Length: 185
Figure 1 (cartoon, rainbow, N blue to C red):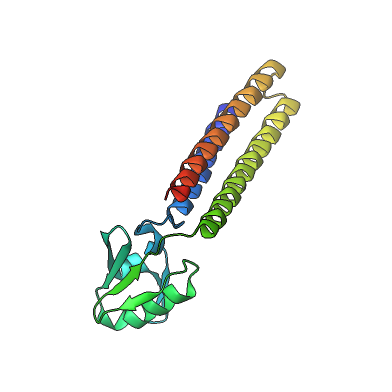
Figure 2 (spheres, rainbow, N blue to C red):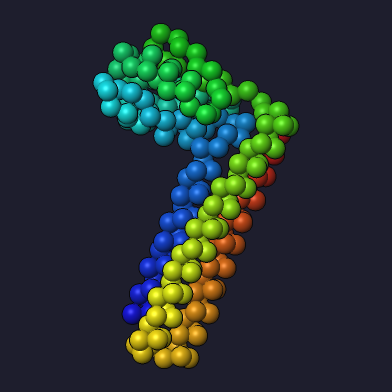
């Protein structure tokens, strides 16, 4: 039973890191990336729909994103969704496509983005620690119930701590990489 607890906790911790990494993809770095707009929801016939299901998104230049909707009638809705989002870009509608020009980041904006990265890293660390606490409670309960010996419980708790340390190190590594990417001029 205890190995199931560790395997389940490892899977959940890996998922927390994946979610943080996906969130990092949506953080602006000064270079154009389709990840900035893929997850935007556009009101399409009364239904919020992800932008990547309504249009082709490409990066023809390092500082420009082009969104080409498959249905031209949705151009206005795409423009409205971009304006309402927090990505801070002005859409240019050219008849059949929406162009987003990515301006170079100011030093102040870079620092603000780094703070956002650190905030997201801390959320991931807290989530990993909460998963560790929950798994430790299950292991201790198994020890009290007698289904797990004291030595085995101690070994499992040590393995759980190693697992936690590994995932927190991964969060720190990914965060440092993203921070370096943001600060790169």
